Length: 489
Image (spheres, one colour):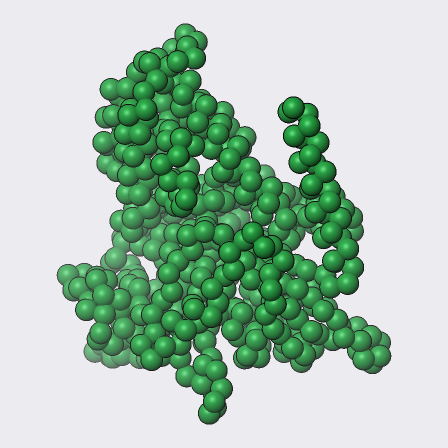
């Protein structure tokens, strides 16, 4: 029976690949994965990218558009009928309303197909008037799902050992206090019990949520779906937690250890593997968004944890560039972007510095992951600008400020903002040397070195009467050019 199931699964994958191959011959498609860590702005990124491309707005560093080779860009029905459609229209309406607001974040996988009609770049082909089609299939999924992929290579004992060790780190131990106390009173050899499993999973999930809060802003949190379970909430595959491995004895089949180990395997089989097989393994390009400013605000421990998460992320990708036979043997991700979002929360003089900081973290993570093959770049960007810029005087000094409306509840020192008042804020400066920005000494300075608060979106203006509003951005075009510019050559 197992052999038949494997054969059937293999036959279905082969048939799906053959269909994909046939489609690629007539209108090639590029599958772009968009994910990110908590509150990094994935939904806003996709909405702004699609809107600016369809409206033909100014994207000077996106070469195919700047060279006027893109003739038309439009949405088409997505190819995957079983995947929810990304709510582009609803998200755009929120961003362009009279009183704009940020759309809700990603809670499940979704997809959108954008089609380009374009003239190829070669002079001879352009002279012949050739026009081509290319589909861009944008796959939006929560970053927590990506961070789960390394669990496929771990046993329950290995994952438990890693999770317990991390919970006992000085930076995490206060958040893990209740769960560690529960763990200390739980015998892995005791008889399996559903209430114990449920209680342990709930306390462990509360610990993960505390780690994700702004005060800590940790990124490496697994199992990621515990933070975003969706329809599977409460199922046995989500009702497990790490256990201290028993010393020198084999746990009986009816023990709590055996129960948790079995559910960990079920989580991998029913949750992680389908995502890898059906979505992740089919991607060509990937962008990973990160709210680096919030992480820097939280200090050295949060930065170290971001580096650990990025190391795990790079370890997930199938190394190497797409060979000519990729359409037959399976796709490979050959370009990866790490993007530090919310660059508009800094003055433009600091954008290069933010980009350099993320670039250094990515470089260190790639070295730790022994990563090679795919091209990796870091960008600082803002998908939709929430601030403008101004200059303030303080004595004889001129301070470069950003101007916007801080979100209700945001704090700056002792002041709590009401979400209505527009203010000019001097956010401080990042160090010119990215290594200094990541040093424990600078990060310990916390809010005395820089002040980062979140802002409401600005009202978006149209360029002319009757035209759609322009979603102003920072460096979105640079990231887009690296991700797909070569595919439109």
